[in-house]
Amino acid sequence: MGDSKTTVFGTRFGFYLVAIGSAFGLGNLWRFPYVAVENGGGAFVLLYLFLVFLIGMPLLIAELALGKISRNSLIPAVGKLLGERYQVRDIRERVSQPPAWLRLGLRHLGGFSMAITIIVLAYYAVISGWVLHFLMQLLVSAFDPERFRPDGALKVLLDNGWLQLLLTSVHLLTVGIIVAKDLEFGLEKWVGYCMPAFVLLVIGLAVKSLNLESAHEALRFLFYPDFSKLTLASAGQALGHVLFTLSVGFGSMVTFGSYLSEKAYLPMAGFRVSTLDSLISLWAGVMIFPLVVYGGQEFSGPQLLFQTVPHLVKQIPGGNWFGVGFFLCLYLASLGASIGLFETVVANWREARRMPRPKGAFLVAAVCFVLAVGPALSTSVLSNVRIGSYGLLGFFDAALINWCLPIAALLISQAVCWMLKQDLVRAEFVDPELPGSERLFKHWIFVLRYVVTPVVVLALVLQLIALF
Ligand code: PHE
Image (cartoon, rainbow, N blue to C red; front, side, top):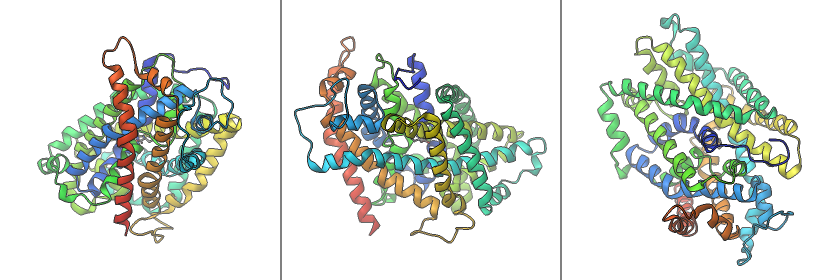
């Protein structure tokens, strides 16, 4: 893909690999389990699944449609909708003039989404660094399993912020070089190909976990909904996590949509990506929760994954190699997701400001590095900096995912359902060979207009009330 815009996904399969490679990442294995534990398990998991299909999937399809129809990333695509940019093909719906608040929101949407993407990428890189650390620790002790101490490995990392910063820069540099050299799609596909191996590893570890005494209680915790455990903030947290895990609200799916071939059928793509992504998160829960129940209160927060999996690995004969496989795949998954975040910003800057790819990549890496300093030092040098009950990393994560992301997603959905030419959107859905596709379109646009908006607003309001 040079600067002239051509589709890169020659085959449908290629697109799936890339979209799934981006959706599937630390969100499924690192974030989902600890957020579910914080919100009391079963009822939250149910709420999460409900919101994946009610809100996440329609929004995912909306982003893909915006990209595919405008053949642009988020900033220029919204510019076209606002009539601020030259357009080759008219994509604006002329019937309704957007109200002033929407115009104002949309004018800042691009910058807002890019800011979210860059900050998330920064602390995502810190956690990717944690993954690298465990990968190396397990690799070094693979021939001498007795040497590996799960708690020790975590403590070394948490006590040493500079080590975290070093690992973060290694990760950012790797991603930066891949995106600067325009290798991301080759690599994303590669990540996609590794997925089956990863799924097998997670299932293998989950089976081991299910043999623990605590498994029964853990499954109950994961699947039995006790609604009294939900708090006012739970809906916002579930919604934020749905958007994060499906890569919605960042503009990533707009960029990917713009690279799609004419033939691609969006509703199916949205359905498959959402389903697969949720299944993986559930397996991650099955794998991790028996250990959480086993370990009691000590296991919680952003460190959860790193407190549990290494213990599990220790209990399996030859488990260090299992661990190496797990953290290797996890690293590839986080690499794939980081590439998706990175590419989103670079593509937007390239299209909106004509910034050359290598310069954009360098700039993103540099800004992320600066922004990562706080989260990387948040468990050591800066451990006494607390905002409410959060450390710096937890605060970034909660503020962006639970608050900013839903607002960005809401604005994108407004743009698609009110301002994008409806005939063009309909054409993405209606396929004469598919009976019922017209009805599918009607349902989707209805949900986008009259369900997504109130649900997102309600979740935000409840969260606001909980804050006070
Ligand atoms: N969905 C990814 C995850 O679950 C995060 C991500 C967001 C990746 C946006 C790319 C773009 O980890």
